[in-house]
Length: 186
Ligand SMILES: [Zn+2]
Image (tube, helix red, strand yellow):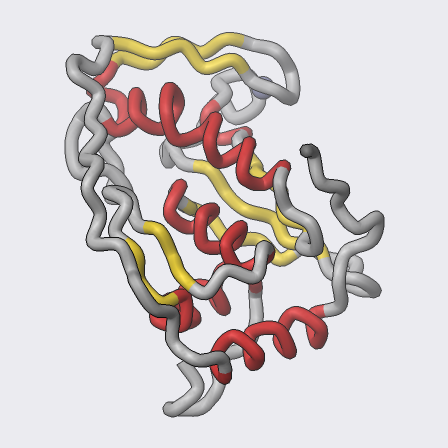
């Protein structure tokens, strides 16, 4: 079942070409309106983050997660308990793109002075020594990248509602570090 990722990252131009294919493809049919509305019944009052880099544990009270990313105070609980495992899982499914998470802001040992409790994405391209980095990414961002990588024609939103992936090209470009095209070029 497990798919193998290509051993080397793609070139930026290759990824840009795939975006052009996506934009030129016919719009998807039978988009789901979304049905399942999943919410944690009662988010715990605190959450423990175990750093995959150094193994240290950081305990957060629910109220620690108030950043612009989160709509309520349980945001950090949602991120660590629910979103982060799925973000890691989805990035593990990538077949072509080489994208990794930088979670160090969540670890008190790795980032003792971090004020922004969020995770970043790092995108690797062939023949480019520097990673493209995007801070403050969400599960929805990671979904977008994985859908694009898998050649999907639609994006599945947080509540299961689908939208054509072409509607998300602007965010996708930002996440992947591809320059914006002109006005028409989404
Ligand atoms: Zn750490």
